[in-house]
Every structure is written in structure tokens, then in C-alpha cells.
Amino acid sequence: MNKNYKIDILILLPILLMMLFSISAVFSASSSFSMEKFSDPNALFRNHAFKVLGGLVLIFVFTKIDYKVIQKYSKLIIWIAVVMLAFVFIFSSGPVKGASRWIQVGPLSFQPSDFAKYALIIYLSALLARKKDYIQLLFKGYLPVLFYILLVTALVAMQPNFSVSLIIFTTSILMLLLTEAKVKHVFFTLLGLLPVGILFVLSKGYILERLSSHSEYTSGGNSNYQLQQAIIGFGNGGFFGIGPGHSNQREFFLPEAYGDFIFSIIGEEYGFIGTIIIVALFGLLLYRGYKTARTVEDDFGKYLAFGITTLLTFYAIINMSVATGVIPTTGVPMPFVSYGGTALFLNAMAAGILLNISSHRKREAKLTVLRTA
Image (cartoon, rainbow, N blue to C red):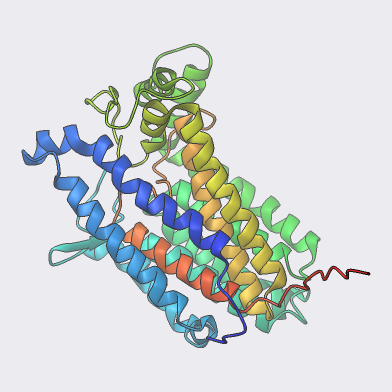
């Protein structure tokens, strides 16, 4: 790493704070469930703590790897992801909550979609950097890029995992809009895919059920039990919270308390203040990540920094929006905070890459104050 460049501490700090805080948050949110399932209140806590430790190691390892090396292997990375997504139906450990998203290898299991979303961001960044001078050309520039976006998005959606596929697609389109791609090409792409998206939603009963449940809840009904319990958690917390480790909702009232709905437990134990701090940390990550994208020296780094920052922020926004009832329930964890394995490690790797990119930013001009006698 060039000694003339420095890692952006304002990217590193919020990530470290959230990962370390997650140990306490997951311990509190999972203790009752762990006792019931494993006869040990610390089972999930220990597992998560070890994963956080592994994630911290991965951050600093990838901080030291020049991100331009990743560019050389971007095509291999995307095709590994595509093969994994295609084979998930063959090697999947079986449906989990109605979907086949996991591959089991011995005692280890992982979600290929977690790897695929970053693989696509990496390859898109390399592709957009290579085609930047003719991305406005439909056949030579735009369509080859769109092919990979649609391929990965479709494979993830077929698992089915509609919410993640939508996040991947939206992030990819935003990356496209950073280039000289013609807006009309993007517009007609979205227009052409709209009927496909509507048909997909109509064909999936679980999506319609979630939309219907959310609509009824927002109209004053009580059909969405999980959301109802999440809102109760926020209400219990008030402004300052009821204190760490004192959550009532974790006592089997709120399903997925340590995963998709951990934001509600944070709101209950740490109150409005606690949730605002989490929002502020992601806001700082967003600001500094985009600043890195704006000031990095090369196009690949620019697109990759933007893609990683956008993806992490989208996940956080959707997780918070689900927990607060703004959008229908969907299984999207909060990066760096929710209990997890594959996602935690891959988010840590992505954070390390973002930090490495930040170390290659153009040096900012320093203001010099001249004092006169």
C-alpha cells in the first residue's frame, strides 16, 4: 500500500462500532431462543462472537490487498457466482422457509446469493471501466452489461429471493447511471421488465401474502404478527430504552429477534437514541463511501466503491424499513449488526475492499492559513 495514502477512519469507525456492538445486541436478542433450542443461553452468542472476530480479521486482510488485483480476476469471480447460483437447486440443503437458498458442504452451509451480489458488483465495475468510452452504444456497450445484471438477478429471484434480487438489480442500475449510458436505454429496460416483475410477483403466493398482510396492518388490522411485535418493541423502548439485556420481545414474542428484526430489539433496549445512532453510523458510512467513489483515482475503484456502499446502505435501509413497518416484511438482515455467517464474512470482505479503495483516493488539498505580522 502506498504510504502516501491513508485509510479513511470515518469508514472504518462506524463498521467497527457496529460489529462490536452486534456482539452485545445478538447476545441479548438470542439468549432465550438459545436456551430453548440448545439448552445454553450463550450458544448463538458464542457463535456470533467468533464470526465477528473472523470478520474483523477479514476486514484488515482485505484492507491490505490492492483492489486492482481483484479487477484481474473479476470475470472468474462472476462465473463462479453464476455456477453456484445455478447449482443451488441441485446441492441445496433443502427449502428453508419455503426457499432453496443454501448449499451445504459438510458441516458448513452458505448462501450463494451473498457471494453473487458482490461478485456482480465487482464484475460490473470492471466491465463499466472497460466500456466507459462506448457504453452509450446499445449492442457493443449497454447490452453486454445488462446481460450479467439480468442473469444474476434472475438466478437469485428464482430461489426465490425477490427482495435480494431487487436490491441487486437496483444497485446495478444505479451503477449504470454513473456512466455515459443513455438514459433512454435504462428507461426502456425498466419499462420492458415491469410486466415481467408484475407476473413474477403474481406467481409467488408468499409475496402476495406479505403485501396483503402489510396492507391490512397499515389499515389498522393485526394480521402481521411479526411486525406487530416489532412495533411493540419500539414502543417499549421509548426515548432512552429499557436497558441492555432487558428486552421483553426476545422472550418468544418477536420471531427472528436476533436476525432480521434486531433493529426492534435495539429500539426496545436502547430507545430512540440507540436507533438514531445506528442510522447515523450508516449515514456516515454512506457519506464517506460515496466520497471515496468520487475521489478515487481510477474508474474501477470509483464504480466498486459506489456499488459496495450502495449495497450495504440498501440492506440497512430495507431492514430498518421492515422493522418499523414502512415496507412489507422481507428477510433482509442488517449489515454488521444482525446475527449471521456468510453475510457477515462477505460484508467484512467488502468493507476491507472499500477501505483499500479509500487508501488510493486523490490527496485532498489542505488549507493553509498564512499569518501576517
